[in-house]
Image (cartoon, rainbow, N blue to C red; front, side, top):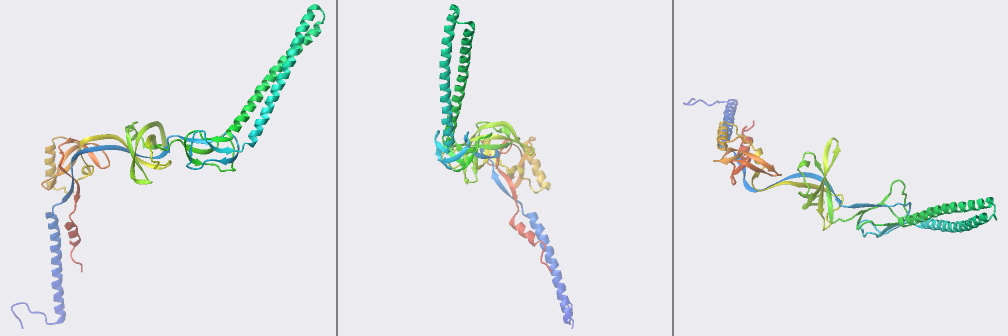
Length: 416
């Protein structure tokens, strides 16, 4: 039986094929509509931008470097004599005064040397006195024989013998005087060695390191062994930083610096550049220079050997127009005819050929403005020329709308 419309298939197989055909046509239609809607949405959805205001403030240019904290004056205390450590009177972190006894080398052998040298000295003095008396007797004999020779009582030979004896006694006195000087020097050296057996602190300070123990033998031969290292004053420290050769020309004595250390990551410390050393340090063909920074350490939080991350302030600009550095790097993703027209408009407004540009929002669209930048820090840059004004919104980032992102995931339609 037929009606005005198409007659439905009678068999089940024909009916199934008919339904599948309808579903396939519907799916293709939906996919086409989804794709068309996606591109229509993209065309009609305007881009959004993240902006920041251009404002007046300060910009500080810095040179970054790393270095190591050290005491301003560090003294290595050694020994000039060899021997066995008998006593230690200080340890790590001990506060010491200048002249304070900090260690004792066994003095037994030095006491013996002192006594022996003093004995030799006394013997040399006695021998000198004896020879002087002999010389005095020889001088009297010579004088008497000279008178007797004139009177003809003694012979010339006796006179010559007396004169020779006198000359020999004078020479013996000179030799004895030399021996006295030698033994006196040996005695003083023995006393000095005994004095050196007692190790004293040469400065006021803090013991940073101790390199010996009781019973250890130290040998003072060609190189004096280091027993202690004493930091003279830890309330004032210095940082020895390595500054790259590209930045060293900006660093000057007296410039302020700030730094932090790993031990106190939330604290910032201050210092002042005290010395820019001209001796180059070459490591694997990289040239750096040592810059010394003086640091106050009244609370003794900073310790020798800590690694410091330093920023040296080389230039500061106050009350100047500045923008985020990201604004100079921004470039709109739109490159169509509309953007070119806006760029042309921006160029005609600037009326110059400044080397850089930023984009500001005008009627919701980016407008290019030519500018010239000055100094920069980690986040902001100085604007020294151009038509950018304080309070204008500069674009730093183009933001993709969330609806646009979600539509991109649905553009392909359902899967079969």
